[in-house]
Image (cartoon, rainbow, N blue to C red; front, side, top):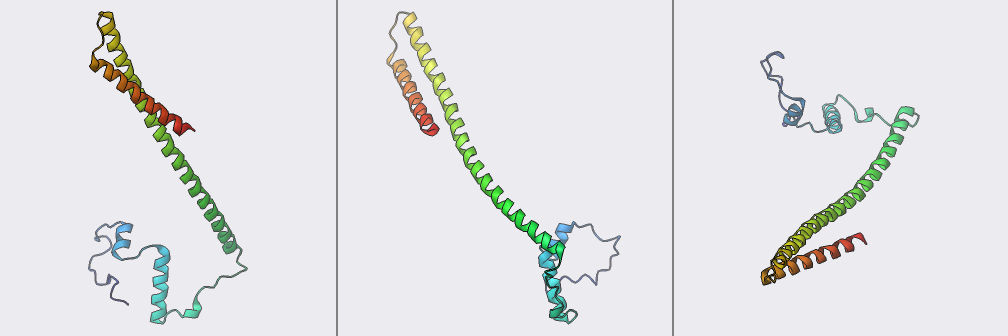
Length: 159
């Protein structure tokens, strides 16, 4: 055999004394990979050792109904899988757009609160028969402009 296989024969522990190891860890340690790869490796090794001849390979029998049905179902599953992938991509795009819209709506709610707060401050000043300070007026205009820009963004996203 090749030098990359683990020599398990010389282990002195019995099966009861062997340390517990998960199948995944064992497969990784033995460098097995997936089952199809393992089968190919075993077949190649048996051919190299002369135990199995190359012509002994199993050929696809066109009369094998089970194999034919399996292949047909595999083709159907591939088509369905491709369809699912395209639907998922479409849904992901729509979900990302919806998240952006929701973020804009949250920003709008925050901007609305800022406008209301600025309005309240101006109203309080007017009730006291005072004119609003420049700072209060500037805050109100800033809040209104910010809200207006958010509304334009939302209108642009809805179109």
